[in-house]
Length: 341
Image (cartoon, rainbow, N blue to C red; front, side, top):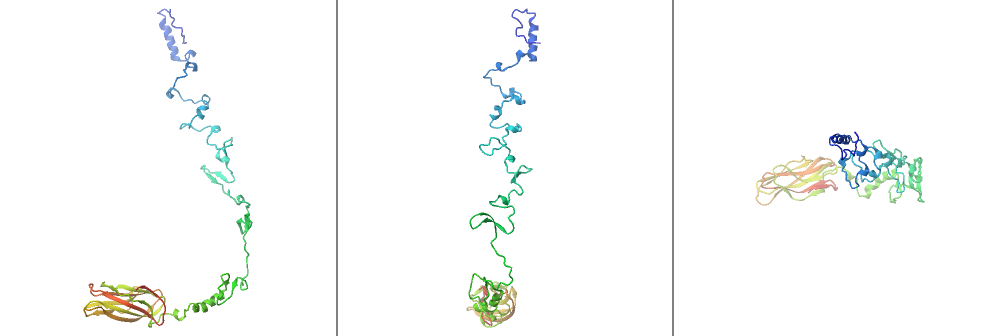
């Protein structure tokens, strides 16, 4: 049925009105009559149509360009922007009127875009030819830098190879057995160095071959530890210690003391924590002062680096044992090291 705005007429018979009215209702329900369609002319300029009253517009031609360019950002899930309008393109500078994707702006001889879309230096991208006055093949034994005039480039190393096997006649070689000239611009020959060590070095430092020999027991004191040290320990306790520089036999002189009546002070010489001397006993039978026992032992078997030690203890924890005036003696004087006085 078609819509007829004239039905029912004002003078229509009442019996005919229902049919005419129903015909117009059917036209309204069908909604196809041109007279019933909503046009721009029928929509007020002040009409505010909410989003829920509009279906999604999916036809590109139905969307004006300003509806996109006027957006501050694209809605989530809007999809990819057409290539012609992509904001993923870049300008090379402010005057560039043809934006391009990054890979088109790169020097592909130096850079590349990886399969994972990462910007990378291309293999071989940074080459010697990129250096000022550089060369891809500068040759052997070259360095890159500046010459005496400040010019950049590759230059030959400034050295002269000398294949001579006998350098004794060279101006920079010194053949001088006593090295008396003390020249810091020359190198000495092997023969000069050997002669100086064998014959001059010992004399220059006042060292004799005898002093470098093994220990031999004597009465020249080479080390001493004179401090009076005490302990109330009732088992052997280390109170003195020396480090030795060579091997041989030494005479060890020392004093062991007991400070109370009817108290024993016991002591021994040790080597590296192991007793090597005879046990000494300083027994006090008086009530006044310390009773001292003078000890002197010749002990052999010492080696360079050994620790010579004095251990003592007391028979009564209420009364201390003492050790003092330890003298390490050799057949002639040398200078070794006291570790614990």
